[in-house]
Length: 172
Figure 1: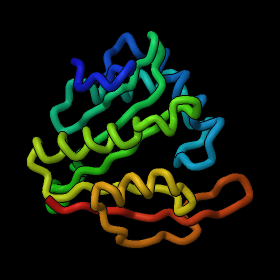
Figure 2: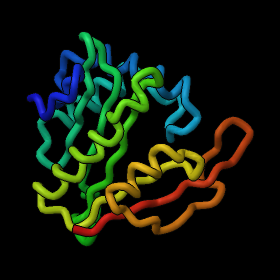
Figure 3: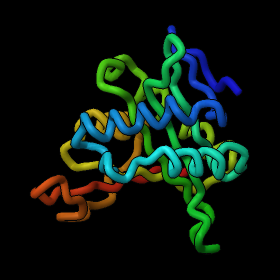
Figure 4: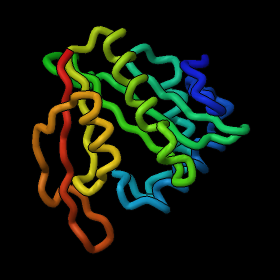
């Protein structure tokens, strides 16, 4: 299902037929970027296939892809934290965009979609985590009036270096 047309980009929900392209895109982003929370070794075709199958028709989760000229160049995930009843009002989200398609407004558009989706599903809170050094993502969150709520020190190990992660939240 198409969520939005954005210039030459089509933002739509993921489909089972997207597994190969989503896998390749995610593996690439995790290899090229040191601001994502996953490492390339964690990304496998089977895990990606299972993830897509478990998310694509789940009403408490959104897995959207950004398509450009038949290729997947970005993705957005939104999900209710559903492992505890007392946290069931919270949606968390994350996004990734391949490097040559960054700085074109896609991150802002995906954040806008996350906010709309969370509101439409009745969430009370929307949150995201990112590396403290990920200034572009932090600016996007701040432009949508997310509040910086805290920092987890030495939370992520990037090679031999430990990095801090910041948490942003927005209350509806």
